[in-house]
Length: 253
Length: 260
Image (cartoon, rainbow over all chains, first blue to last red):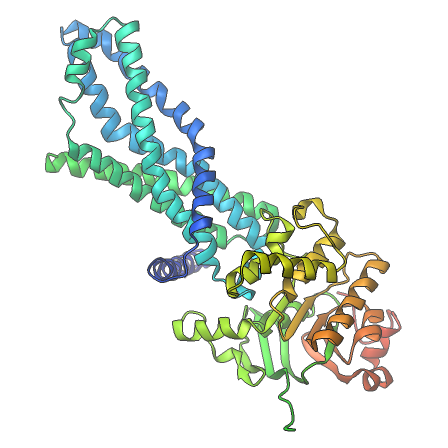
């Protein structure tokens, strides 16, 4: 076996062990509620504006490009159905998760990585405080809660920007826009979207925590941990999102 | 009175990283309430020794007893052992090399951190205790400052206050004098002596400062290439004719200790 595959195998084993430790901390006390709220507050503030800026143009683009096309078939009243389906099912969960991965994932990994290289993780352990319980779990819970919340916001923003470019700008009728908005989406879409967000949030929190705790090599190591977290989680989210969407389409949901 | 249990006993402790043998067959006994200064050139396994003592690292072989309890037998991954390990670590305070204060907490919260985790005290009592310890390390009224606003020496003293906040029985100091000016390191040495007198704390101080060893040590050890070259009460070690110890105290390049 080459050195590389040994390292890869070792990392996988370490991740499984890490997962077990996280699960153990989730089901047993003590819990650090204040720390969790603090991280949540930090994440919301970090993510709010970038996520909004990333999603708002999507609704606008669908309306701008779609309005002309739909008009050719005399179906411009159906534009809002496409908009709502695309945003509820795909864009909002995926973009919110990707932005959380970029903003929250990098900041959590960088924070834990900094604590690690500056000896603060060891200091926690010496003070009989489990580092996974104190720094990883609050970040994980914050990601799981914040991602769906942000997705609600991105959905609203996407719809509003879509409406703005469809109705006042492209001249689609306001009444038919609203009437067809929910024609193709159901409550299931909403729950699937939320579920995806929570799953992706979990992935971000776990990977950021894991790579953060494995940081070594000073400031360069911290940068690498943050960077790896973002790359890994975004790839993971996009691939997982594709398979979930395919599965749901097959099932006819 | 029954003879007091030694604070720390090491039995043939070995630790290596790959081909690099960091500790070889290190054995020693440190009586309770004494100050041990462990000397040695950089990179000879002093910090690893300290990390093994608190169970942050596990020796490859050999055993470490803390007040008679074998810390090497405890596996952090097993839940029953973890409780015991955490209970055992409560006996320790540790001063890390650069302090390891939490950057996102003010000084007061840093010192209060172990108290909030482990003591059932009201916020008022905690504030009193924090003020008392900060005053003891000569830093009155800095509670609201952030660690980044302090100088290196001040950070170390805050870290010291945090290390002793839970009134531990054993305090481990990883190079307390490195990076400090002579006056500041003398101040820190005096602090160690004072706390030692006041609370009968056992200290293990890692250092390469021979002046510090002369000033504060009850016991002196010399680690070189992972082996304990010399260990014993200060007077005995200072009288030793071993070339390692003489070279180190004479600040000489001529002798068995080689710079790589």
